[in-house]
Each structure stands twice: as structure tokens, then as C-alpha cells.
Length: 398
Image (cartoon, rainbow, N blue to C red; front, side, top):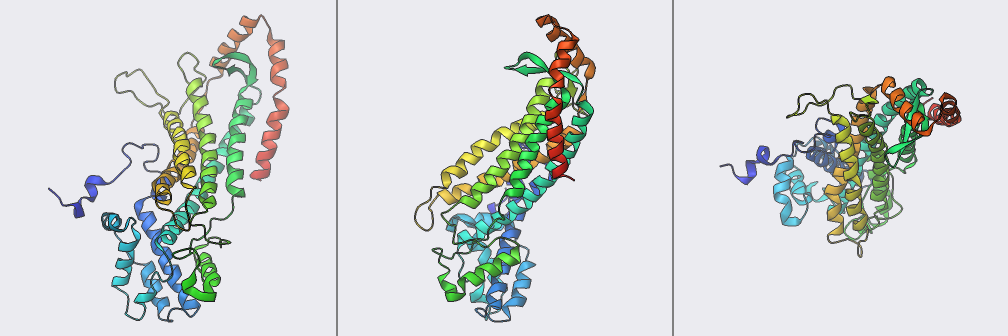
């Protein structure tokens, strides 16, 4: 039997129960390796800033470069983390082990555990949000093409699961596209995520009057924003991330929900490019990708609620609420990114069945005793709204 120190393969989360994220860019960007690399980047940037401002010796710059290239095993940090309650202490020990004596005291100088973890999570979130915006852009381009192709294709609109009135396929997809636009707008409008460097109680007292300048130097090194003051217990940066991810999740989830309804056997208005097989019923072609997207979109709000609760934090450093954020934020980032990537892939492969749409519309027309002129009157009303959505699209993606 293996010891706890070498059981990485036995306990590694390789995505078995989160197939929507398995193999995605977001999975890689939110891995334990990515978190460790981001923490190392923070320590390297801090040491460089201390040398730049004359706090640490000039030789620290070369050590900062060496730190940036240090390979740190995530599992080793994880196993050592329970002693201090976070993976930062074993990380600092690892980084100091190879440092010369004159630089050793300046590694992590003036920082605290929360600074390292918070900054690492901001770096990770920044990378993920860039990827989400890219995938949503890919999705938006696909949907805009589908809106144009389906703008005059009549379709049954459904309310409370029942046939309601005529609309068009273009109008329905325009709704999808508008939700994607909203999600992209939220990402683009969000402020740049901030560095965290407040020290033990948020005052940067270890740096004396150079405190604000050191913070600014670290922020510049990491391409993060300079905070007005410490945000150890002011969690608005994390809340902003949550807001954007919920928007992306809702946009993808809406598309998946509609595809699941339209793909039902008795409706048959759309199918995925490749239906998922059933283990027991070989005749089935399940809308498996839509199922995964819809599932992940429903997981995001509960995760967000943990982070919202953690925003109520006491004094200068919280005991518990901050720690509760870590995994919830990581999973929000991973699942939100997976929703964006998978929905973009899903949309590009959708196959719409206009024969089925016409059949279902005929049932509606017959049930209300109307004729084709009634359908035309209803569907003509969709055109200006479709034009508005496409105009917004052209503005966002010229």
C-alpha cells in the first residue's frame, strides 16, 4: 500500500465526474498546478519589487528569476497545508530552501498567506475570464449566422411548455445571442482584477512609506490592478468574478435548455451534430452535450452562494469565510469556462429540422382555427427585433 506522500495518482481529480470540464482549456487553467504556478509568480514579483525599491538587496532580482522557474509539486504542498491551514507556508519553505543567505529573509517579506492565495486566484481568474470571453465570441459568431439563416423560418413559440403563438427560428436564436452579448458585456465592463498585498493586517507596515509603491510594482509585474486599500475583508473583486461567470453560465444554460426541449423525440426540431449513445437503448441519440451544459449551468448559482456568504468577514482578516471561497471560486471558474467552451462547440454542430418545425406549427394553426396569413402577421413582428440584435452584434464584433 502506498504512503500518503506518494498517493497522487490515487487521489487526483481527473474529471471523471465532471465530464463537461474534462479536457477543456478551463480545466487546465484552474488546475492545482495552475494555482501553484500563480503563487510562485506572486512571490517572484514581490521579491523583484522589494529589490527595485531598495528594501531587499540587488542580488534579490536574480533570486526572483530563479524562483519564477522553480518547479513546486502541488501534492507536496497539499499534504503539508493542514498544519498551517493553507498551502503557503510549505511553499515559502520550498522557495527559501535554495536561496542565498543574504536574500532568504526577503522572500515573502511583508506579505501574508492571504496575499499569496488571493493574488494567485486573481491571476487564475484573469486567465479564465479571457478564455471565457474568447469562447463566447466564438459562440456569438455562430449564433449570428444562425439568426440570419433562420430569420424567416416559422416556429412554434412555447410558453409554460405548451404551444403559444408563432415566432421564428431566427427570433429564438436572437434571444440566445442577446444573452451571450450580455455575458460578454459584463466581462468587458468588469474592472481589472487587483493584486492583494496588504501584509498581516492590511497596512503594508513592513515596507514603511514605500508600501503603496511596492504594491503598485507587484501589480504592474503581474498585470493586475492596484487596489485602493487592502481587500482582505472587502470581497468585491471576488463578487465581480462571480457576477460575470453567472452571466456566462446563464447564456449557455439557456441555449442548452432550449435545445433539450426542441430535441425531444415528439418535437424533433433540432439535433446535436453527434448524438450521445445510450448504454441500454441502442436506438437513442441523446443530446449529451446539452445535458452537460445544462447541468453545469445549474451548479454555478449554489457555488456563488458560498462566495456571497463568505463576503461577510470580520475585522482585518477572516477566520473561515475566506477559506470557504477557495474551492467554490475555482469550481465556478472551471465550470463557467467549460459552459462557454462546450456551448460554442454545441452551437456550431446544431442541425435544425424545418420539416418538423412546419409540422408542429401546423398543429398550432389548426388548434386555433387560423391560416397562413395569421402566421405571417405574427412572424413579421420579429424582424425589427432580430435587426436590433444583429446590429448590436456588428457593434461588438465589427
